[in-house]
Picture 1 (cartoon, rainbow, N blue to C red):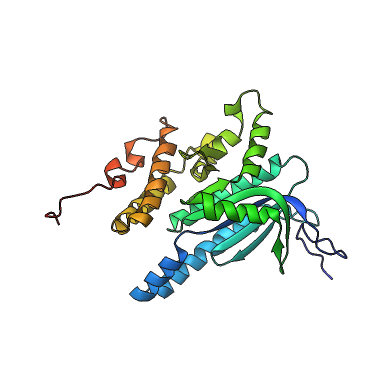
Picture 2: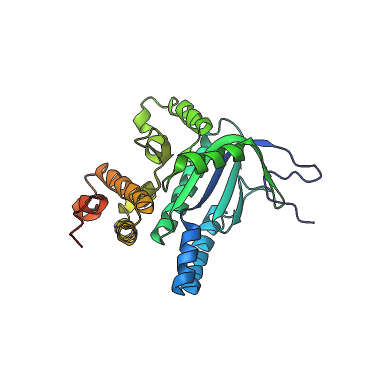
Length: 279
């Protein structure tokens, strides 16, 4: 019988919790998109776009598009059901390599879904976890879910306190904090929450080829379209305004690469009142 590659499953033994990096994420506004598509008669088109995007993204998350699998076990496990995805990385030493792997894979996944019009909200924690095809269980999952449901709010993957404390420890390994990979992987938001800087994935080939400009401009286009589509619904519109501000902030960090052409106009991010006599 073929042995499971799941790092949480030890053949011949029952389920055991392992200290892990854990992420819980879902697609923002998934139910509303489905309901709107049903009303507009565009369910087949939405299904095709969602299915192809998630198929590609999950293949990357599961390592099917990268290096061939080495050794008897994978380094992490993925469990997905439509828009809900849980990933666990069992921690071997101090969690820096597992967090680095998580930041890289999640950035790619989040960015590619955004390009297709699907924005991710999630939480990332460190804590005990067990997961297989039957169950996902542990305090690490509870904390990641809590961060997603209570703290994320906007289309961002936020770090729970357990993960943020680990990152602070890892950054002390470097003589200068701004030289650490974490200083590019993560940003701190205006509310103090640390979140994943997924746009950094366009700089993955920075030294060889420079930024992926076409992908950044597509991200700009997708966000501007969402702002226009939801201008009459402030609660939803504000979430895309958050993405627009994040997009512009990212561009501002690299003035040698990006200019006004790559940024979203401030007029599109402002929601202002008007006189009732105006249309």
